[in-house]
Amino acid sequence: MATETVVVTGASAGLGRAITHEFAKRGAKVALLARGQQGLDAAAAEVEERGGKALPIPTDVADAKAIDAAAEKVEKEFGPIDIWVNNAMTTVFAPVKEMKPEEYKRATEVTYLGVVYGTLSALKRMLARDRGTIVQVGSALAYRSIPLQSAYCGAKHAIVGFTDSLRCELIHDNSHIRLTMVHMPGMNTAQFDWVKNKLDKKPQPVPPIYEPEVGARAVYWAAHHDRREIYVGGPTVGAIVGNKIAPGTLDHYLGRTAYKSQLTSEPDDPSRPNNLWEPVDADHDHGTHGRFDNRSHGTSLQLWADLHRLPLSVGLGIAAGVGASLFFANRSVHAKG
Image (cartoon, rainbow, N blue to C red; front, side, top):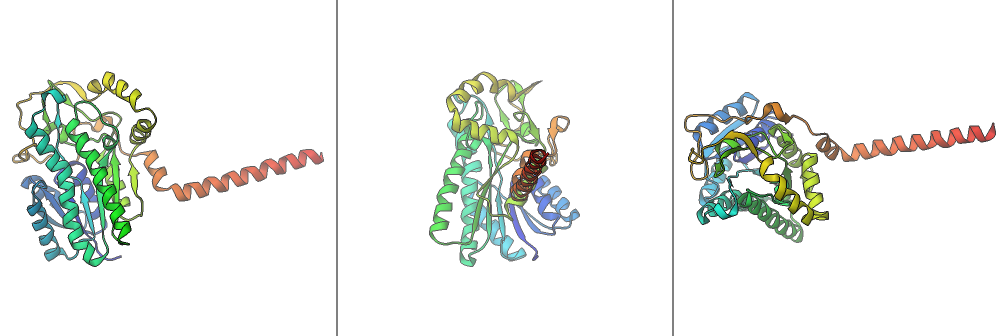
């Protein structure tokens, strides 16, 4: 297999950093886009350690020109982009009544428009070649919103709408570019320590929590298989399917429980540094994992079954056939007796 050229946004920490590891292990050339130089440099070193080639490019994904310039640099140094992963995000933990217009604007520019701009830069190069793959990192919250995260939920919902429109257009044009979304559960990443938080308790992912490597494996798989969407983790499936069946019931359930499930008992300082406007890794590399390792799952049986659905269904079919044969053979023996 030829060496792949891959772009990952939000690559300096958390899920994005774990995604770069997955590609690096297969010898890919990985361009890492994020704002913080220290996190980028550390993540790039890990890519090289794992067998890949790294190109760290400080980039604010809310700047369309900066993203396009980064894409130009990638193709100049690494060659044609094969896979583009839109992962960068930011958000604010707060009730809507305490949000400011400029906070919504910034969270939307990064989390939603960053995906749009990244997709446009990828398409600009892939369409001429009629090949390539774009992976959008989504969330269970792209379908089922929860309180205290209206900026993030709104942006993730918008990504689904944008991606579905683009997918239809690619089909209309008979394009060979592949487009997929991978929807994540709550993950153990550093965002919960650097996110802007207006509450008096530290935020946490909605349990059950998964390690970022679980999501990274799903992204790598999605980049190499023709699947429209992938749901990571049983809770993601439950949230998305449950919202289709009984959205009103979930509104009331989440209104009663989702404040508590998103907050720890530890006090937080709303005036501490946050990454909404500027990176917060000037004096600290945040790494891949957050502070919830002792509560996080490193695997997902649901994801394994989903990614192996064809051989699993064949195996179950064979097992059912063998079982039926044995059952009827046993009945035949008893009937003759």
